[in-house]
Length: 401
Image 1 (tube, rainbow, N blue to C red):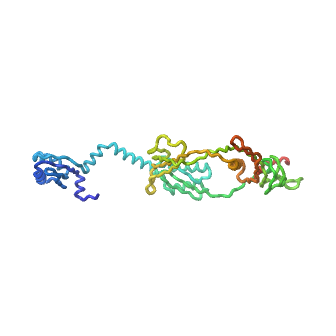
Image 2: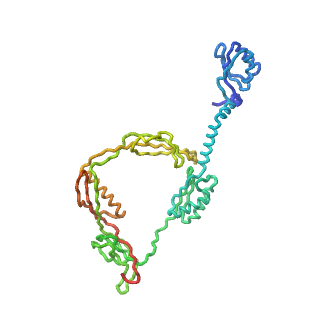
Image 3: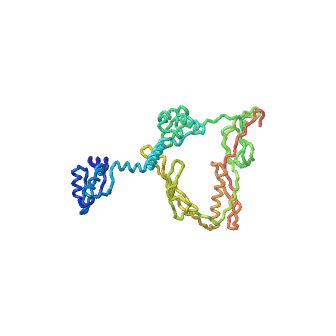
């Protein structure tokens, strides 16, 4: 509500709304006007009653006139700065606490609480960057205004890590974020000494790709573990040259898998029951506000959402977290023998892929044995897998292998 100058003056000096009553009410009003009392909004509410607003200093002078006319007064409302100050003084502890909380919150939002480094290729590089940032004052517990400007930080990090092509630095709320982009250099193969390639496991040779060295096996040949595949000796037998054998040797390797799976399967489902819980979050600390207590659901899935308070580029460290919990129930379902067998084959394949290299290829799979007993399906699998089977073995230069 917009106040004019006179109303603003009344609020500044303070005023009260009173009720006056008595048989000589008109005489009281006239006497107040004669003494130039500042009164307004005079409303007659009865034959011997009236309400009016009066300036606080004139209210204290009214007692003599009330005694003279035999009237009485009653304060209905209090307005203005003097009464506001009085209310604040009564709750000085509460208002001081609110101001202190706001100050602490503002001070906390102006500090660095964590430092995130993204793009460092090695732990040693990340540690060196972190130490450099601490030397520049960018570390947890430091006020942002005491740290160097962005350009200075970026320039110093590029001096520290010459392999970087770009460095970006910024503050995201109370977190200092440094992004490093390092130069991508081609892989340089280190020179190796003389060596053979030997088999790491028994297999049948599927194919060879020899870059350097002399192949001593051929496709469809059976080899044992440790058997020579590519020799590091090349040339004639009288004066052979020793080289570092390189290449790939693919072999057919055999694996077995055993799976035992019950036909009575437990299946999870959402019951449709849900509840929400609300928290105030400061960093990693979450204080429950609503919905806390004993867990309503024995099993549930939780989905969390965080809402932070931001203004322009400035973020409060305090956030609002809402956790949605959905109850999970379980039911038992009896599968047929065919369905259980199909699921067992999927599990067997997943088990195999944990044992073989990522680039290996499953050439063939067969069920060696299958039986159903006591409500369970038992299977034994045999797999033929094509994978790399060669490894390096140094050559002693003193004598020919």
